[in-house]
Image (cartoon, rainbow, N blue to C red; front, side, top):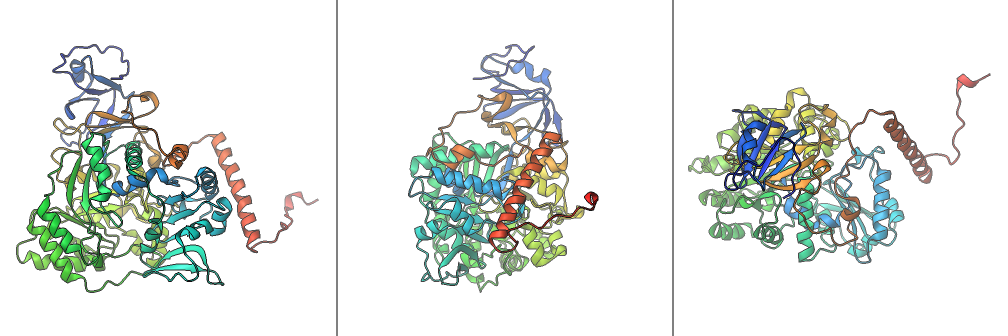
Length: 629
């Protein structure tokens, strides 16, 4: 086992008493109120055995002990994303070009052009979530014409939030969209004057048109899916994630799409603990599917690496609202009868559930069903259940959730959608979207996550920054101080609260003897860096159950090996995943580099305006009175 040479530490322990991993010379934040800070810890058989100082762990060094010198860096409990589409994301990860973290549209299009050149015939270039037009210096989307220029022959699909998708001509041909293709329910194919699709797809308000179009792209085979999933899990480990709750979702069928993580778990090759949900996929058949599932398995029958956590995030399709804030709030039909049957079935069989609910109007209707069942003694019934998202939930609804024994899970979708939400609903509602502090003040368990990958990025530090600052990627301050949380509270939402949502608060979420040996050694001190630098934090070394699953910098070579990225033309093989910017650097050289990028973008912007007739081809003569004789 690789180890760091540390002077003054000698092999003392017998093999039967030795730790598997020791982290020393660290600034450990444990999350344990009984001992919140320490300098060292030891892990054996996947569990923390000692939390203390260097002197306390030194006797546990054995011949096979991996000793990690943290070099005075911050160590935290492993992060737990309480709402992540990790299973679906893993199946496609190596096929996707990630614009997460890319600062300019100019750079994003250059990446797309380069990837199109290496993508073989029959395959697509796809950009699927994790970015927003507001993150770009240009503050705009790419146009179909720009996609056509970058990739004249390779199909390109670019998904933007829950709002729209942009396709080039090759992609329109690949999916067969023509002037005769009707608009699907809840969606729009934007057309030119001649009736032909121009490349824009609009969710109006349902994103089904976006996802059903994406589903026509080529998929990976079994072995490539396993490799793709392993690399996605390793990418999550890169940011200190050690656990995630998979929220299921559309186009994620059970058992077919769960087979890859199941096989990796069977082989002991997961590097992230996954608790998953089941979402009935066939409208009109939801109750039949749930009835079969509750008779076959019980939540928590899995193990520490892969476990069922209940149903959701939808129980019936008709009860789901849409979160496309560019469109008005949808008005749902009469969904309560079937929804009530589904909830009753789950409660009677000891199943927990989670519910996608963006708007308070939906939450109030759901709560009325729960209160009806509460009269029969089914609520609170000991089952874990929660609302997801809840951007416009009211104080009264939160009181009702607390009375019924529920919990909440919030995501930083507003990091990406905050500007469009504010334009539609105004500054006042945006300040409480969602009302995080009001949830916590009622004593509710509030887990935090990202809802990646179709909208938000999977980078948890972007979400933590949003919780603390209330700011979007575009720099808009949405949530005032009264609706923000401090860094310690935000971290608890990303660790202890997530463990509580899966019933694992007794074993996970803090660094305490007897708890899972899950931790992250950070590139920068989360508690000390300026607020604006939180999104740029990464993990240098991530440990899950005593296994080192990610290691860079001084720790290079200490992590478990995984297969190389395949296929070889994969965007991940060439660009990686999240595009780290390195964070704000106060140097004159970096400042000059940024100005140079701005000048180049200015020229591109000028040419873009000229092509559209928005500016004259000849630049106006400048006038500067300082140089007038």
